[in-house]
Length: 261
Image 1 (cartoon, rainbow, N blue to C red):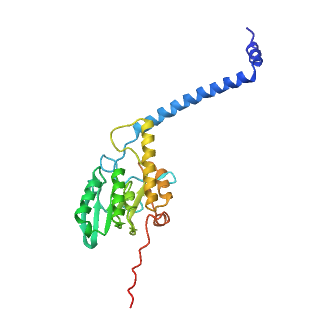
Image 2 (cartoon, rainbow, N blue to C red; image 1 turned 90 degrees about the horizontal axis):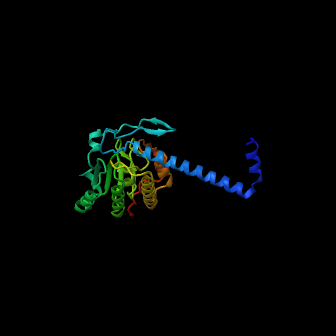
Image 3 (spheres, rainbow, N blue to C red; image 1 turned 90 degrees about the vertical axis):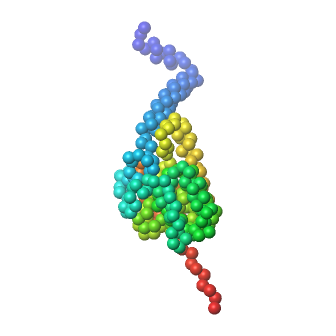
Protein backbone atom coordinates (compact mmCIF):
# COMPACT_ATOMS: atom_id res chain seq x y z
CA UNK A 1 0.00 0.00 0.00
CA UNK A 2 1.34 3.42 -0.92
CA UNK A 3 2.18 5.82 1.90
CA UNK A 4 -0.23 8.51 0.65
CA UNK A 5 -3.26 6.21 0.52
CA UNK A 6 -4.23 6.62 4.26
CA UNK A 7 -3.98 10.40 3.84
CA UNK A 8 -6.28 10.31 0.81
CA UNK A 9 -8.76 8.18 2.76
CA UNK A 10 -8.84 10.73 5.60
CA UNK A 11 -9.45 13.55 3.16
CA UNK A 12 -12.55 11.77 1.87
CA UNK A 13 -14.13 11.77 5.38
CA UNK A 14 -16.56 14.57 6.15
CA UNK A 15 -15.90 17.13 8.86
CA UNK A 16 -18.44 15.57 11.24
CA UNK A 17 -16.63 12.26 11.28
CA UNK A 18 -13.30 13.97 11.86
CA UNK A 19 -14.71 16.09 14.70
CA UNK A 20 -16.26 13.07 16.40
CA UNK A 21 -13.01 11.18 16.08
CA UNK A 22 -11.04 14.06 17.58
CA UNK A 23 -13.59 14.36 20.42
CA UNK A 24 -13.30 10.67 21.31
CA UNK A 25 -9.51 10.88 21.27
CA UNK A 26 -9.59 13.89 23.64
CA UNK A 27 -12.13 12.16 25.88
CA UNK A 28 -9.95 9.07 26.12
CA UNK A 29 -6.91 11.18 26.92
CA UNK A 30 -8.85 13.06 29.62
CA UNK A 31 -9.91 9.77 31.21
CA UNK A 32 -6.30 8.58 31.27
CA UNK A 33 -5.09 11.81 32.90
CA UNK A 34 -7.95 11.69 35.45
CA UNK A 35 -6.98 8.15 36.40
CA UNK A 36 -3.36 9.24 36.84
CA UNK A 37 -4.43 12.23 38.99
CA UNK A 38 -6.60 10.08 41.28
CA UNK A 39 -3.79 7.57 41.65
CA UNK A 40 -1.32 10.34 42.49
CA UNK A 41 -3.71 11.93 45.02
CA UNK A 42 -4.26 8.56 46.68
CA UNK A 43 -0.51 7.97 46.88
CA UNK A 44 0.04 11.45 48.29
CA UNK A 45 -2.66 10.93 50.89
CA UNK A 46 -1.13 7.61 51.93
CA UNK A 47 2.31 9.22 52.19
CA UNK A 48 1.08 12.15 54.31
CA UNK A 49 2.56 11.78 57.79
CA UNK A 50 -0.82 12.26 59.44
CA UNK A 51 0.55 14.99 61.68
CA UNK A 52 -1.29 14.95 64.97
CA UNK A 53 -0.11 17.34 67.70
CA UNK A 54 -1.26 14.89 70.37
CA UNK A 55 0.82 11.88 69.38
CA UNK A 56 3.81 10.68 67.39
CA UNK A 57 7.30 11.96 66.82
CA UNK A 58 6.26 15.05 64.87
CA UNK A 59 7.09 18.32 66.65
CA UNK A 60 4.21 19.98 68.45
CA UNK A 61 4.98 23.21 66.61
CA UNK A 62 5.79 22.60 62.91
CA UNK A 63 7.65 25.30 60.97
CA UNK A 64 5.72 28.12 59.34
CA UNK A 65 5.37 28.58 55.62
CA UNK A 66 6.58 32.00 54.51
CA UNK A 67 6.73 32.47 50.73
CA UNK A 68 7.26 28.74 50.34
CA UNK A 69 10.22 28.65 52.72
CA UNK A 70 9.90 26.96 56.16
CA UNK A 71 10.46 29.38 58.98
CA UNK A 72 10.61 29.20 62.77
CA UNK A 73 7.76 30.53 64.92
CA UNK A 74 8.01 34.23 65.77
CA UNK A 75 8.34 33.38 69.47
CA UNK A 76 9.17 30.07 71.09
CA UNK A 77 6.24 28.95 73.29
CA UNK A 78 7.07 28.76 76.97
CA UNK A 79 5.34 25.43 77.70
CA UNK A 80 7.29 22.19 77.14
CA UNK A 81 6.10 19.83 74.40
CA UNK A 82 5.11 17.22 76.95
CA UNK A 83 2.63 19.65 78.52
CA UNK A 84 1.11 20.59 75.18
CA UNK A 85 0.81 16.98 74.01
CA UNK A 86 -1.26 15.84 76.98
CA UNK A 87 -5.07 15.85 76.68
CA UNK A 88 -6.41 19.30 77.44
CA UNK A 89 -6.91 20.08 81.12
CA UNK A 90 -8.87 22.87 82.76
CA UNK A 91 -7.82 24.85 85.82
CA UNK A 92 -9.73 27.76 87.32
CA UNK A 93 -7.30 30.49 88.32
CA UNK A 94 -7.71 33.91 89.91
CA UNK A 95 -9.85 36.57 88.31
CA UNK A 96 -12.28 34.09 86.80
CA UNK A 97 -9.72 32.83 84.26
CA UNK A 98 -10.11 29.19 83.21
CA UNK A 99 -6.81 27.88 81.85
CA UNK A 100 -7.32 25.35 79.04
CA UNK A 101 -3.95 23.72 78.39
CA UNK A 102 -3.04 20.74 76.22
CA UNK A 103 -4.20 19.06 73.02
CA UNK A 104 -7.85 19.10 72.02
CA UNK A 105 -8.42 15.36 72.10
CA UNK A 106 -11.69 13.63 71.12
CA UNK A 107 -13.99 14.12 74.10
CA UNK A 108 -12.43 17.44 75.13
CA UNK A 109 -15.67 19.30 74.42
CA UNK A 110 -17.63 17.05 76.80
CA UNK A 111 -15.10 17.61 79.60
CA UNK A 112 -15.17 21.34 78.92
CA UNK A 113 -18.97 21.40 79.08
CA UNK A 114 -18.90 19.59 82.43
CA UNK A 115 -16.33 22.07 83.73
CA UNK A 116 -18.49 25.02 82.69
CA UNK A 117 -21.58 23.39 84.17
CA UNK A 118 -19.81 22.85 87.49
CA UNK A 119 -17.96 26.17 87.80
CA UNK A 120 -19.28 28.34 85.00
CA UNK A 121 -20.58 31.03 87.33
CA UNK A 122 -16.97 31.82 88.30
CA UNK A 123 -15.53 31.71 84.76
CA UNK A 124 -15.16 34.97 82.86
CA UNK A 125 -12.31 34.20 80.47
CA UNK A 126 -10.94 31.03 78.86
CA UNK A 127 -7.15 31.26 78.48
CA UNK A 128 -5.91 28.91 75.76
CA UNK A 129 -2.56 27.15 75.45
CA UNK A 130 -3.02 24.36 72.93
CA UNK A 131 -1.48 22.96 69.72
CA UNK A 132 -4.99 22.05 68.50
CA UNK A 133 -6.46 18.67 67.69
CA UNK A 134 -10.03 17.53 67.09
CA UNK A 135 -11.95 19.99 64.90
CA UNK A 136 -15.34 18.69 66.06
CA UNK A 137 -14.44 19.27 69.70
CA UNK A 138 -12.96 22.69 68.93
CA UNK A 139 -16.20 23.75 67.21
CA UNK A 140 -18.32 22.53 70.15
CA UNK A 141 -16.11 24.33 72.68
CA UNK A 142 -16.23 27.53 70.66
CA UNK A 143 -20.03 27.43 70.42
CA UNK A 144 -20.37 26.90 74.17
CA UNK A 145 -18.01 29.79 74.91
CA UNK A 146 -20.13 32.11 72.76
CA UNK A 147 -23.37 30.76 74.26
CA UNK A 148 -22.09 31.52 77.77
CA UNK A 149 -20.80 34.93 76.63
CA UNK A 150 -17.27 34.26 77.86
CA UNK A 151 -14.08 35.99 76.72
CA UNK A 152 -11.03 34.17 75.34
CA UNK A 153 -7.34 34.91 75.66
CA UNK A 154 -3.95 33.66 74.47
CA UNK A 155 -1.31 34.74 76.96
CA UNK A 156 2.21 35.86 76.16
CA UNK A 157 4.30 32.92 74.82
CA UNK A 158 1.26 30.63 74.96
CA UNK A 159 0.40 28.62 71.85
CA UNK A 160 -2.93 28.47 70.02
CA UNK A 161 -2.51 26.54 66.78
CA UNK A 162 -4.32 24.29 64.30
CA UNK A 163 -7.92 23.95 65.59
CA UNK A 164 -7.29 26.06 68.73
CA UNK A 165 -8.03 29.39 66.95
CA UNK A 166 -11.53 27.99 66.29
CA UNK A 167 -12.02 27.83 70.08
CA UNK A 168 -10.46 31.27 70.47
CA UNK A 169 -12.96 32.69 67.95
CA UNK A 170 -15.85 31.81 70.27
CA UNK A 171 -14.99 34.52 72.78
CA UNK A 172 -17.16 37.63 72.94
CA UNK A 173 -13.97 39.52 73.73
CA UNK A 174 -10.77 38.01 72.25
CA UNK A 175 -7.32 39.10 73.41
CA UNK A 176 -3.90 37.93 72.23
CA UNK A 177 -1.18 39.25 74.51
CA UNK A 178 2.14 40.42 73.15
CA UNK A 179 4.21 37.42 71.93
CA UNK A 180 1.19 35.10 71.85
CA UNK A 181 1.77 32.43 69.17
CA UNK A 182 -1.30 31.81 66.99
CA UNK A 183 -1.12 29.67 63.84
CA UNK A 184 -3.45 28.00 61.33
CA UNK A 185 -3.21 25.34 58.63
CA UNK A 186 -5.32 23.02 56.47
CA UNK A 187 -7.56 20.40 58.03
CA UNK A 188 -6.30 16.86 57.62
CA UNK A 189 -6.79 13.29 58.73
CA UNK A 190 -4.69 12.83 61.85
CA UNK A 191 -5.80 9.24 62.48
CA UNK A 192 -4.30 5.95 61.38
CA UNK A 193 -7.02 5.13 58.83
CA UNK A 194 -6.24 6.22 55.29
CA UNK A 195 -9.36 7.07 53.26
CA UNK A 196 -9.47 7.00 49.47
CA UNK A 197 -8.70 10.20 47.57
CA UNK A 198 -12.41 10.80 46.98
CA UNK A 199 -13.28 10.25 50.65
CA UNK A 200 -10.44 12.46 51.84
CA UNK A 201 -11.43 15.28 49.48
CA UNK A 202 -15.12 15.08 50.40
CA UNK A 203 -14.35 15.02 54.12
CA UNK A 204 -11.89 17.93 53.89
CA UNK A 205 -14.36 20.05 51.91
CA UNK A 206 -17.21 19.34 54.34
CA UNK A 207 -15.05 20.15 57.38
CA UNK A 208 -13.68 23.29 55.73
CA UNK A 209 -17.23 24.48 55.00
CA UNK A 210 -18.28 23.87 58.63
CA UNK A 211 -15.30 25.79 59.99
CA UNK A 212 -15.74 28.67 57.51
CA UNK A 213 -19.44 28.97 58.36
CA UNK A 214 -18.68 28.90 62.10
CA UNK A 215 -16.00 31.60 61.84
CA UNK A 216 -18.37 33.75 59.81
CA UNK A 217 -21.04 33.32 62.49
CA UNK A 218 -18.49 34.33 65.13
CA UNK A 219 -17.73 37.51 63.14
CA UNK A 220 -14.25 36.47 61.94
CA UNK A 221 -13.01 37.69 58.54
CA UNK A 222 -12.74 35.16 55.70
CA UNK A 223 -9.05 35.97 55.17
CA UNK A 224 -8.12 34.02 58.28
CA UNK A 225 -9.38 30.72 56.88
CA UNK A 226 -7.93 31.45 53.42
CA UNK A 227 -4.48 31.51 55.03
CA UNK A 228 -5.28 28.16 56.65
CA UNK A 229 -6.35 26.64 53.32
CA UNK A 230 -3.11 27.78 51.68
CA UNK A 231 -0.88 26.20 54.34
CA UNK A 232 -0.03 22.47 54.20
CA UNK A 233 -1.04 20.39 57.24
CA UNK A 234 2.56 19.80 58.33
CA UNK A 235 3.22 23.54 58.60
CA UNK A 236 1.67 26.55 60.29
CA UNK A 237 0.85 30.05 59.11
CA UNK A 238 1.63 32.35 62.04
CA UNK A 239 -0.67 35.35 62.37
CA UNK A 240 0.77 38.77 63.09
CA UNK A 241 -1.00 41.11 65.54
CA UNK A 242 -2.09 43.24 62.57
CA UNK A 243 -3.59 40.23 60.77
CA UNK A 244 -5.44 39.17 63.92
CA UNK A 245 -6.96 42.64 64.15
CA UNK A 246 -7.70 42.88 60.41
CA UNK A 247 -9.45 39.47 60.42
CA UNK A 248 -11.29 40.48 63.64
CA UNK A 249 -9.84 37.47 65.41
CA UNK A 250 -8.93 39.84 68.22
CA UNK A 251 -11.20 42.57 69.52
CA UNK A 252 -10.65 45.97 70.99
CA UNK A 253 -11.15 46.05 74.76
CA UNK A 254 -14.56 47.32 75.75
CA UNK A 255 -14.36 50.59 77.63
CA UNK A 256 -15.96 50.56 81.05
CA UNK A 257 -18.80 53.06 81.32
CA UNK A 258 -18.16 55.83 83.81
CA UNK A 259 -20.62 56.23 86.62
CA UNK A 260 -22.54 59.49 86.64
CA UNK A 261 -22.18 61.93 89.43
